[in-house]
Image (cartoon, rainbow, N blue to C red; front, side):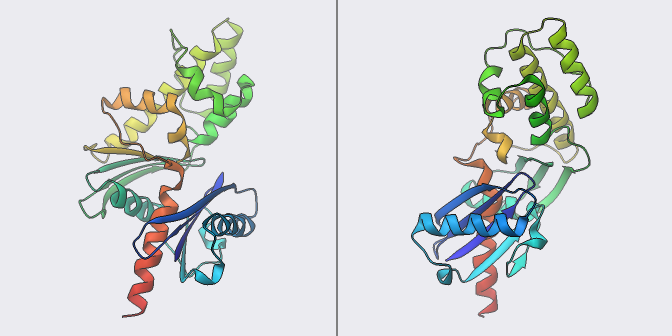
Length: 260
């Protein structure tokens, strides 16, 4: 067995694969402020779900925001892990859009999942899960409801600012003017979609496109980005674990190299 641990800013994910590179089990836990503790919790839960003991795991790769703080054999970048994970599941994909809690990425890959180019937003919360968390708090709505409320919108508002602080002021202004919450939420999704589309255009947007990361579990955002890109994206069954899955695949292949 081989494990990949993605210590993300918001959530830590652990995936265990077998010799056939099949997912045996996985777990997702909040990261909190202690990446070492959250990574151990995620791995322990994944092992328990798979009916495994840690001694069965031959090699561990860590990735993500807190990868250096995880007890693993070796670390890899998120870009590499996401690309490997997507390529294993969807070898036809050439562009990957990954939106997580702390950053967003656009990655262009070849038929073998090798990275040809990428663009990344890791300096600003706009265009990330954190942006939506802030807005959900302002609107006093659970973040899980945003995706569904999006589809009730008949007249999405225009959110012109790409800065979280200024967008917050815009949202408050729209609400005070009597705009419906669902129209504000849809406007936020379209604003994020525009920012990510512009970022991905810098690397050359190619078909087929896959969406990954925790924010890809928000159907409202997926619809907004799909419309902006004018594409029908491929969506993994569990988009939040793709980076950890890629890390687990790299764990297997790295381990095999050490034995040759």
